[in-house]
Image (tube, rainbow, N blue to C red; front, top):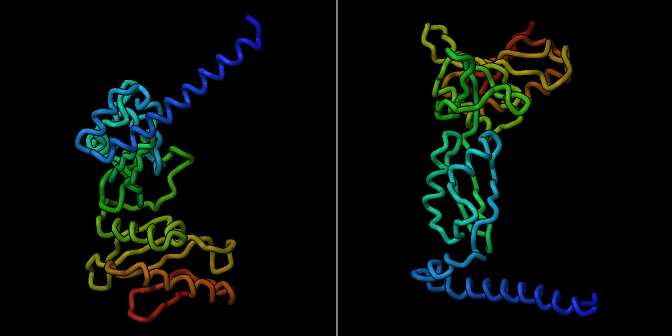
Length: 257
């Protein structure tokens, strides 16, 4: 058979596939208006089998583990119930919430809200990583180039919640906190926090590479942000500072070296 004779048959075959896909998608749009029976009617069609899984929002969790939890393969219809898939993925210790949506004809898209690390602390087995709720996370601190979160002495849920708010509301300041700890006040009660904060300028611009910031344990992120304009002024004046005290209402006290 000549090349010219073969070409029409190829065009007919390709057009047939396109026509079938168009019919299948049109059928999907039609039957979905009847949710009671529509998905069941389409689930037997090979055209609507799962061929691809997309993950969005994954940074710390293992993508392979999340896909494995879905328990889907190329024989699974895209019209399978989504709630069980979401529940399985949300059962992963790194996942706070999972949402699964369909992208016709054969893709499942998984939106993952991860539990975000906010601190790490010494533990029997090495280093434990915690989220803002105080939950230990299965994250290896040395993975992905290292985990850039503050070091805390113990699992202090009040401190961890504050670090979580700081990470959300003042991420630049959070990124500069290398250590955070609870400390005793003048009366002996451990109702204060101390933060070791790295300098935003070259070493020596305001006394060294780090400064200790003291605050009450009920300090807000907004109050901690008062540190920034004080830093700007100290850098401009090139004042050498050992400590910045935010414990007193409406005052910021800089203790010089």
